[in-house]
Each structure stands twice: as C-alpha cells, then as structure tokens.
Image (cartoon, rainbow, N blue to C red):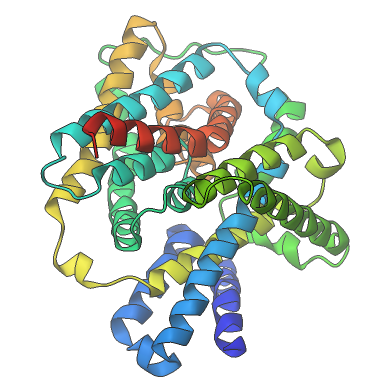
Length: 394
C-alpha cells in the first residue's frame, strides 16, 4: 500500500523531468500529461486486479482528497489580492462580466438540459468552478457539494477536449471575428511596470522548468513551511466544519479552506514564502494523475453527447454574452479576450493568450483577472450549484 501511494506521488515528478528534457512533451503540458497518463494506465491495465480493488480505491480517494485540500491554500498563499484588485479599469469590469456570463449561462443551460442530464445542478456548480477559476476550483466544488464521482471524472475529460478547442479558437479566429464589432485596444505607455511584473512572475511560467525551484535545498525550509501552513489551514477548516451538521460538512470545509487561505495571503511572511505556488501545482498534478487512473475509459468511446453539448453551450454562450456586454460597455477586443481566457483557462495560459494576441500590455491585467477568478471560483461554483438546485426544485 505504501509503495502504491509513493508511486502516485512520484509519477508527476517523472513526467516533469521528461518535459524538462523533451520540448514536445513540455508543449503538451504536465497537467494534460498527468491526466492523460492516468487515463492510459486505466485503459491499458486492470489496476484493481494488480493492486487490489479495495486497497487501490482507498489510496485513490485519500490521495485525491488530501492533494486538492492541501493544494488550495498553497495556490492562494502567494496571491497579492490587494494589488490584483487595484488593477481596475476595463480589465476588472470585463472580468466581472466574464464571471457573471458563466454563471448565468450555466444556470440557463441547467434548465434547458434538465431532462437530459441527471444531477444537472451538480454539473452546473462544477462548471462554474472550472470556468470562473480553474482545475483546482472544479475539484473543490465537487468536494463541497459532494458531487457524483463518475460525473466529475467525465466532466474533467470533456473539459480538457473542449478547453483545447476554445484555446485554439481564441488564439486564431477570435480576434478578427470579435474585432468586427468591438473597438481595438489602445496602448498605455505606463503598462508593464517591472514591479508589477514581479508580483506575478511565479505564475507566469507554464513550462516544466517552473518546478525546478522545488528541488532547491536553499529554499527547502520555506517550501516545508508553506506545506505546514497549508496543513494548518486544512486542520482549522476541518475543525470549523465539525461544528456544523454533517450534511453541511463538505461545503463548510472547502469554503473555510478557501477563506483561510486568502486570509493568510494578507500576511506578508506567508505570502513571500518561496515555492508555495509551485508546490500547490505539483499537488494538482498528483490529483490529476490520480483522477486519471480512476477514469472509466468507456466515457471516451461512448460519448455522453448531452453532457458534451452542455459544456460546449457554457463555453460558447458565456463567450458571446460577454462579448455583447463588452460592446455595450465599450471594452476593447484584447481586454475582452484576455478576461474571457482568464476565466475559462486560468492563470498559466495568460502568457500564451497574450502572445497569440501580440499584446504584452494585457499580460499583467490578465494575471490579475485570473487570480480573482481563482479566489472566487469556489464561492461562485457552490452558490450556482445550490441556487440551480433550488431553481429546479430537486
């Protein structure tokens, strides 16, 4: 059992090393590779027969829950919330519209697809977590609302496919298309201040090289401290949840972890600890690999067209609703696209989108917008889940 757990913890490290040495793999991305390898192992081998069904299931469930719980505070610790909120103007207005668009379209879609999809309120909540924040948020919302495991794994698989299509669209056709009716971006000579750039440097590198810092002996004490503080946040959240009825335990735990993690980011000492973000992302890789090995590969061969269509409806619907709002608010094309991407794709993809748009001035505002999405994703996802459940009367 110990060997199996260690294998799950170390496989992402092997993938990181491979990506650091093979550029093609690094372009695919460690997150996608972790999830993909897990799916491949699940499809190619009878893992329960190899490791024992009960033993493997216990390891998978424990690792997935512990990794996401510890990752959330680590990702939040290094966020400079005050600085991000100060980067206001069109970027923050557009981001608010992006978040509201995802929430509204998810709810409308839940009504439209209610007869086709079981537990649509859970799907709506997890979708909002994913498309206002990111991967960590969808997992957190899943835990908070105690969503069905099979639905979550299927959603995660379809999300990867549809998000890749969304990314290709934004990087190629989106700017000329939406530029037909949104105003062009106007340059700001004061943009890209080096001090501001340093605030987001630790999130800017989406390559496998960003994980090298975790192997540094010089910063190891700070890395361990960040893990200790994360464990403390999780412990406090579990303590708080024990004060509530069992039916509310999961949602109180996740909201408490998020709130305490954000509160800790206001403490300069904790916010400046080295490698908390990278360690959090490594735990996300562990989570992705673990979930991949739990995937029933029949979900790819027997496509759930209704679920696929619902997720696609959210991506396309929220994009066009936000575009209409940006037209009314006179927000430019580049700001619209970077904030839509900040919501749908999250922090690591901001440099990619900015590069594709050939506009480095939107890089820092894009980071700030995506960070706000990270911070709010859990709250919004849980709110939409229970709001949709009430709306549908289930």
